[in-house]
Image 1 (cartoon, one colour):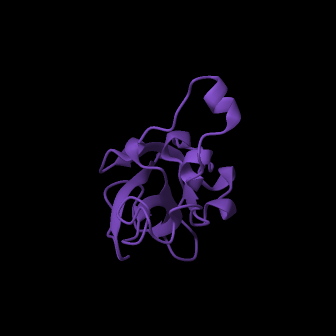
Image 2: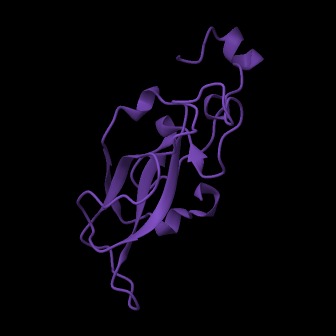
Length: 133
């Protein structure tokens, strides 16, 4: 879950690879998966679809016990807001969800009004800003 991902756990990320244009999405789910390599597209074993993944730099060390690397994977489930706008997450977002505009290599990202499905705040309206649709 994103709330449990610490900056120290992703400090060895070199880049984020996106398989779709996620910047039009309100949120993406992120998790730290144990993977056999530092780079390359990981296998995906969840419902829904993988949206992207992190590539680690050469300084990243494998786990002593498993020989695997902890890398972020970004994904959505079939009942998420992008495919079910009036569904379970019409407002609110899963605990592991973050606004994709707040993500970068080595930065865990955070929730925003947009990712939570809330209407724009008074401050946004006063500045003339709107949520992209």
